[in-house]
Length: 178
Length: 223
Image (cartoon, rainbow over all chains, first blue to last red; front, top):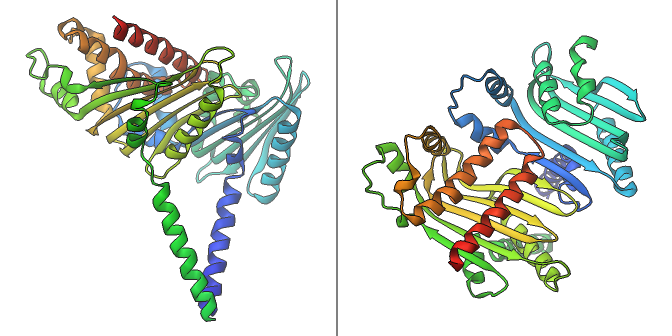
């Protein structure tokens, strides 16, 4: 009987920790959310391809991709989903004390927040979470971007800029303010 | 106490049973839809391309040999079409198949009206099945399925590059080869290439691209 209880307990605990890690997955199949996900498998596949290039820009991407595990971007434009997204972020931050605020910017009616989890070495983070709310290109939106891996902050600013994500301008200066 | 064990066994049994019935494959889905008139189908076996061509080098031949066939299934709808319910239902079925563990998601894009996924079966350097799905609530959806035996994306890219460089003249293939080169390899590799560009918007473009391509296939078939 004791064994059974322990097994049950273990299952519940692993279950909940999984759930905690993936609080944003519910937005993946939400029909009101615009989402983009590139999985660890994708990056594994790209890493597996020896892509020789003379183009320094492509090389920079390769260096960046080598250290990314996951990219997820969610954009909500309707009030209900926006509220849901914002509260999900708040809950996620509350339950992950290691995610600390990296910087925050308020400009033109939009609020940009960056949170990061420190990585193994200086200037590297293991998780970067961006949360943007407010007026983006004249529309009320909530944007969440989550990046995991062994991330060099300098390289990430480049990626977000090329993805034309809101908040990329702010991230450009991230290493200066840090 | 005994009751607990009894219940545990029962639930285990039910779980096993459920997982068995859930085991659905895309192969099955494609076969099922062969007879369905709401679907547009297109199959292209790789054997259509003559593989003993002299202008292919060994690696290129290997790549071609690893590809078995390309299946395309499309569910087109028009504005105000009565097929929208079926469209939603079919999309759900596809989703339930692709959500199974053996289908590994590479890229997923979704918006209120559109969606696209890139999934594969196998290992990252030995792909057995590559699936591209794209949907648009106003136009319908299309599934590209490339099957083969341990397809190596790296080698595929190399073949594509040699086409780009002009080493490999596609005009030397017969008509079917032409479609094949436009459709299968390029689509897959394009998708990978796009990741290099890292542009989110591309998924959408890709989708439109796919749609125009399927249009051109349909025309080919009609001809």
